Image (cartoon, rainbow over all chains, first blue to last red):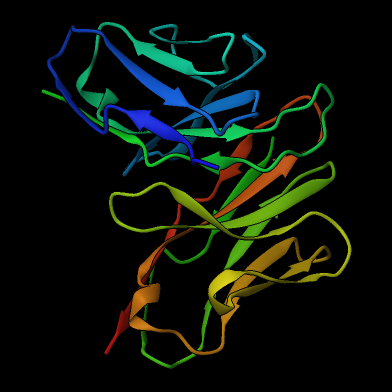
Length: 116
Length: 114
């Protein structure tokens, strides 16, 4: 099976712009989670989507949003970019279940966003 | 709230020496524990996981970890490291329950010296 793919791999934007990142999960996986990785804050959970619904959300401002399509592909959007949004954004897919049990997460290579 | 602490931010070690990367977690509910490795400009790769059962967990690339509930620790070990093990290592915890997310430690940069 192909792994998790993220596009683009690198992105440069300026303050105030908006950006959309894309994630294609492993075939058959229904859950997609997004994480932000920065040197200062480390790896932080943004949100999780399962069957086109946001199932869980981290502690990020409303400028960060996401969605999931019927084919399980997911996008995240950041509006009104700030310098502090510069980070590696990682997407992880998992089979996903309707319960609270554990599902192993498989990570993509990430999108490196630089805000100037 | 779930938290994960990695006690060492940097660990330098000579090639073929043993290494231990330390991780402590806090949780009031059942927890699953993981170690991930990240090479430069790459995503996270799962090294090993503890879900239940035997407290000694073996993973890929010769790594192993021991779950210690009384000390709330999940330290990662390798008896003999190679140059190729140089990378950043993250300990993570996942709580069963409604908060379905991985909580990561701050990471440990392992540098293997020739």
